[in-house]
Image (cartoon, rainbow, N blue to C red; front, side, top):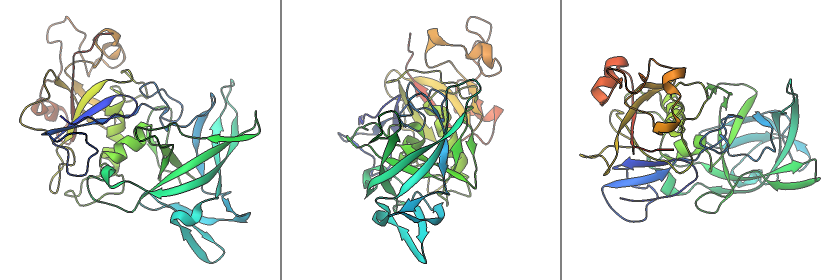
Length: 338
């Protein structure tokens, strides 16, 4: 079993494709899913985006208002995990955007919340590591960001250190709301720190722009992955797990898939947990943390309360597909007690 730690819940992706970050060869690989704040909602005990927001709720980075060397950038866009813009009549991308300044919108913790502008700057840009490209898509970058702190009037790292010791982020062409939903936007995008779930799912191979898997919508599968990683069973933005929790995730994408595959047997001690779609768990066998389970109360159609007749809703992939024939992601986990 190959182990690779990041922050948050740990995902064991059995039979991970060549290129996964690993420590020792075996039939299974382990990736850790970062818990982060999905735009303000607690995701496995950390920020979904991974940003250090000082109590504010990130709304998204604005396409407008970006500058480079005091010159306005226009036509800012995210193309397959890369920030691209125009400066004058010239296209600037890759490391040419080091020094660019950006504006993000964040909501304060006031009642009602007030949306404020937060200044960021890009201090370094490097190519994404091949180890985090299991589908060999290539061509993306890691951005080191700093946030301007008005309270101290200083620039501070925007991201925490990931398992590689890097404080970097990946741009994604969408934002996420408090319910954990992916929101398409013509005005905003996400810089997802690699300590967070949005970036983790991207690194597991579910790059939202990816095509070629029998016409499968990888954008939706990436969104589904964020639900799995934080045990957002009800699909309402509420995490039902704890940092450091181990899970095994796999998909049934058609050729050239799967991106993450399941071996002949589950990892020792792990049992089936759930099948998933963009709305959360299609159905559950049990919650990841048995004594910290509110799923039966919040969305009882997905998990019948323990102790009642037929206390589980689904215990196999086949049973999941009986509820949703289009379900693609599944997971196993240990029986964890609070």
